[in-house]
Amino acid sequence: MTLQVINKDILKLNVDAIVNAANIDLLEGGGICGQIFRAAGRKDLKKACDKLSPIKTGQAVITDGFNLKQKYIIHTAGPIYNEIYKEVCRKLLEDSYMNSLKLAKENNIKSIAFPLISTGIYAYPLNEAFMIARNTIEEFLHDNEMEVYLSILGNSLINLIMS
Image (cartoon, rainbow, N blue to C red):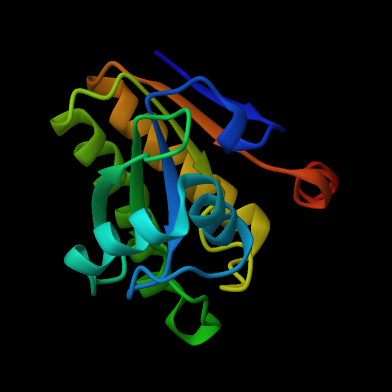
């Protein structure tokens, strides 16, 4: 199967799992993380996340989807971008994608949707984050069967196309 880059809200997709661009404490945050908590049901999701937190940057954990149309939520903490530690950040971002995909495979997930991890308040440069996401997902798909979507919304998509 192949990677599909899309301009759609991952909460509206018909997939088995979505990925939450989480923080290490798995707390409700802003951006896609906050949207996922609100849609899934804050109380239930917080209770499930409290049992799994804290996680390390690059690690992935799984919870039920609760009130979402998707059965599962895979939570991964991407890196906060730092130019001085660029290579460390790159490796941690690769880990976020690869560990999420491996966890999905372990749970027999056939379709998954990712946001572009770490590009919001974690300030990862958009074009670099996209290349890391694409390359890591394609590496996984070389040896594994899964339907994978990478959602890039609004201005982020426009900026990526223009760069």
